Length: 142
Image (cartoon, rainbow, N blue to C red; front, side, top):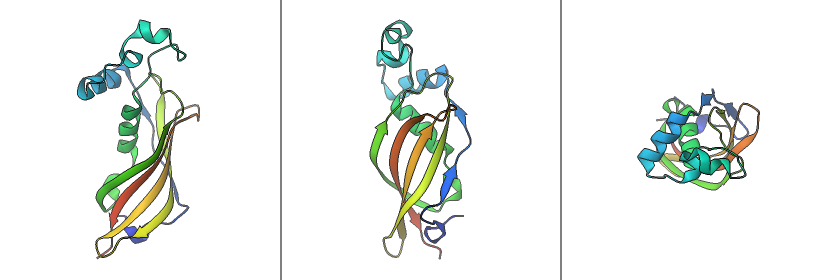
C-alpha cells in the first residue's frame, strides 16, 4: 500500500494501455445522457474538423482513472481536478495510457495529505489528448 509518506515529488508512473471502442462511446452516452452528435452520429461527425466520431472528454478521463493504480494507494478521497484541458481528439480504436508525475505534497494533519499529480493522457502515437492536475487525499501510515 502506498501512503502519503511514500509519494516522492518528481516520481513518474506510466500506466498500461486501454483501447477506446465504439461500445465505450455508446455506453457512456447512455450512462451520461450526453448524446451530442460529435460522439454518436457518424454522418454529422464526418463534417466536423475531426472527420469522424470522437470519444467524450469525460469518457477519456474516466477510462484513464481506471488505469491508475488506485487499489495500491491508501486513498481517503478524491480531492479534485484543476487545469483540465482536452488538447486532442480520442478516436475510436485509440489506445490510451496515463503518464502521471507527482508534483506536490501537502500534509493536511492527522488523517493524511494531498498529493498533486500532473496527468497526461496520450494515445498510441504519443499524442497528448488530455492534460490535467489531479489531487488525491492519501492517508498517513499508522
